[in-house]
Amino acid sequence: MGRDSCLREFSDSLEQVVQYPVNLISTDSYPHQLQSYLTRLNDAETKLCCVDGKAKLAFWICEEQGCGEFRYSDYLRDAMSDTPSLGSGFKTSCVSDVDELGKLYKIDTNFNPGIKDPRCCFTFIHARHSRDRLLISRPMMSLLFTYHQVMPAFLDFVLTFGRREHGQELHYGGFRSESRLLDSSTRIPEIGRSGRDFRLCYNLKSVEHSPKQTDWPWSVRQTAIHHTFDIVTGRASWIVVKGDGLMENRVKEATDPSSRAAASQFDTNSRSFASSLNTHLIYIDWAGENWQSYIDFLEDEAQDKTRRVLSADVDRLPKSKVAALPTTPSPKLSQRSWSGLSSLATEKGSQMLSGSSHSWAKLPGKLRQFASTSYYAQRRTQEKVETAGGNDELRFYFADLQRAQYLEEKTNGAILVININLSVISEMKKFYQELLRADESSDEISMNCGDDVERFLRRASSAENDLRLQKSRAESLVRVLADRKNLLFGALEYHNMEASRLSAQSMHAVAQQTQQETVSMRIITLVTLFFLPATFICTLMSTDIIRWDSGDGDPQERTVSTGAIEFFFAITLPLSCCTFSAWWYFNRRLTRAQQAKDAAMCLV
Image (cartoon, rainbow, N blue to C red; front, side, top):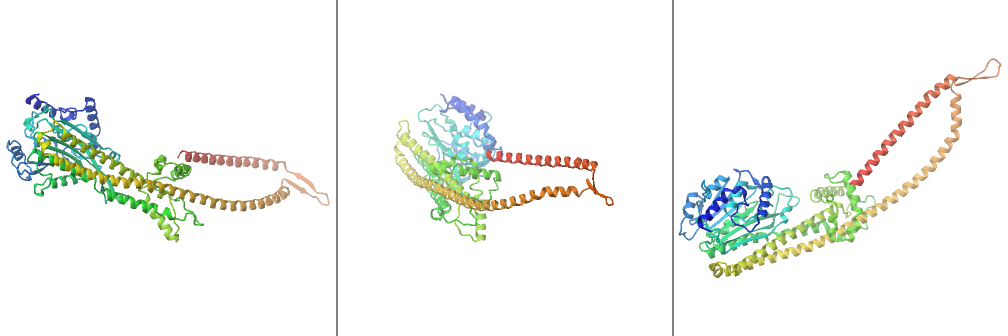
């Protein structure tokens, strides 16, 4: 393919920048894969990117002169020079919209680039925090990725950033690469590209201290890297995505010529290649940081929350009050939900004790949704109550079991992240080993960079060994947490059994007292029934319904008032019917309400 044809295709690609990655000149992906990436990028645009004009896209560009403030005219003059000077330095720039980015690349109205690629260019994409939108607009991202012909697989890692509530995407990672060591069909000498290059992208994760999070002062953070290296011209480009500016600061320190660092030399192709290897080590070292401190924190938390179950005398229970489960539910759960969770935990307890450590995960999510947020508040309330009451008994609460489960999940997450990092580092080592042995590789790199590759492999292997050590510690902690979780559940079950036994004894005493009262009530009822007929007759005879009249010396004459009898029944019978009807109505209403409440409890 001719030079003009390649440049024309590149210009057409820039003209269709909104179609990235469909508009790429050459890629190993199939058309349906490119269309799928475009659809995913369109769907995630509002959560992934900021609006144009509010971006902060940072550049760190290797110039042929010293370090200083970046100026487009200076960069154009140096980049177009055919005899670059030694002792090159870096210049910085920051753009906020797509127009400024187009000026940086000197793209004219016909979408023709007017500037050569620098010896090395770092592009840093940041965010306000780890779960916020990236400070780059969608047009800027499309132009940036199109200009550098970024491989589509890099979007798999970029799309894990952006605004989100949870961090499940942190469990995704990998390593991707494309090599065109002999194919020069994409050669564009106007911008300093030979067409013979390799491209790779990957993401790594590490754990960082977050002092603002009082409940859990650690967070897993990620960084995504895309790297292109031209084996003929020695030009390298980097795109680094990370929420904060940590990577930018470390790269600037490592590439500062005054620091004499191994990643600051770009005057020859072999030195530029060696600097790229050392730049990879910056990211690898970061991926291995803080894991020892984080595992120490997990172990301390596990010991603090579960150690006492090993030595507690669970047989010695307070007689006055048995607190196997907290009586006050979390404010995040209603009383009905708490009752359902307690009964569900009792029903499935035997399955947990006899099954594996992962059987706890089969319980509904409500059992674990407030393990971290409600734990500290609930424990503080319980400690105040126990201190005020002078109770020094070692008690166990359902919140202790929740906390143990939460710690186990965090530890399993750490193991997964470490495994992802180990896989990425292993794939990267394999890639550079094969690159050094490849016949298509540049002679200068093959002959002069063997020691640099070996040094890179040794340091990467050292980082792998450290990660494996922390992984072993985490796996051991998972086993300890699983065993102590079962022991905690057994202690809670034993407390519940003892509480039920004491409650049964109390109910037995109440039943005996009720039986005695029942006998007394029967005696009272018998006496009442004995006198009831006579009382009724006396009451009836005391009214004017039946009168006994006596004349002078004559025997008494009985007089019955028929009207009084009719009036008596006219009032008594309707009043009795109303009384029984009201009793039937309210009794039926209460019965239905109780049935509805029982049905709702069964659904929880």
